[in-house]
Image (tube, rainbow, N blue to C red; front, side):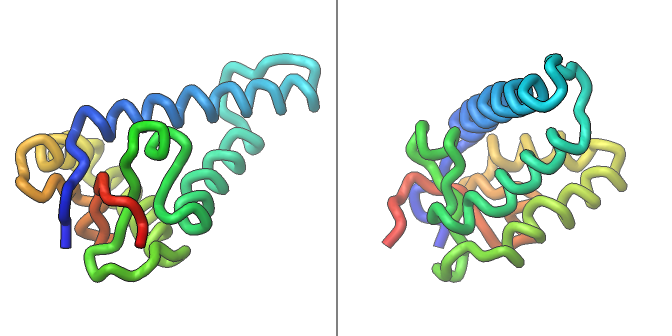
Length: 137
C-alpha cells in the first residue's frame, strides 16, 4: 500500500506533459475540422480530455503519457487494477469537491502531495488511489 509514492514535482511535470500533448492534439484536430486553431476550449477539446483522463489509465495500467514518460502511474491502494469507477471518482467526484471549495481543495491537495509521507491528495483519498513509481504487476 502506497509504496514508492510519486511526489509533487514529478506529478506536476507529468501534468504539464499531458497538458502539452492534449493541447497539440486538440489544436490539430480543430485545425483539421475547422481550418483554424481554436484558442478556447470547445466540445472537441472537452471530449479529448475526458477520454484521455478517464480511459487511458484504465487501459494502460494507470499511466497517462506524461506519467509514463516520468515513470509514475496511478495505482489503487487495495492493489486491484484501476477501473472506470476509480477514474470517475478520481476525476469527476474530486473535481466537484474542488469546485465546491472554490479551488481551496486544489491548494490543500498540493500541500498534501508535497508534505504527506504517502503523497496522497484529496482526489487520491476519494478514489482510493495513490501515484507510485512501481511498475504494474
